[in-house]
Length: 169
Image (tube, rainbow, N blue to C red; front, top):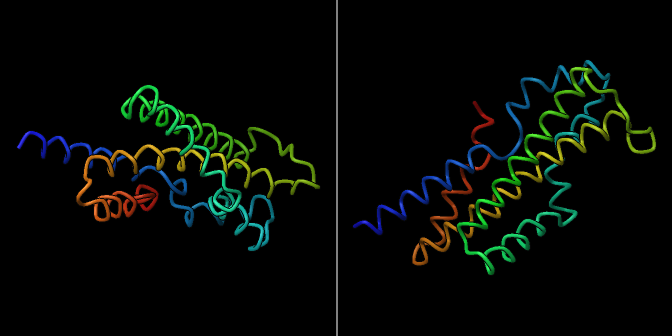
């Protein structure tokens, strides 16, 4: 019974962590503000919003998995999860603050036109935030799988289905 309670707590924690990854905040609420402030076309706005897809296409989601594997082999799963989640927080914080600061005009648009100008800068910062979400997944999924070996499918599905739900609020 204690083991089942432990597994349930681990799954609950992993699911809770997954809630806060994904697209930052309710994109639909502030996308019109970004579009108006920078005079972006809908296509440019879609490019900014698609940063997570760019991270996956560039295979950058492999990096968190490799880091997790390396640390977990040397120090164990719990230490690897702590390191990865710490990295997650760093990327999400940096991406969010820089994205917000660009939109608010606190930092100037420093990307040259050849790099996409404001669209490139916002996409880059949104990509940094999205990469933080990939680090979070690299910590959550292996732990859920390890704790529920007989029910991997449902454990992973329930944890992943909550990915980004926090942005809906």
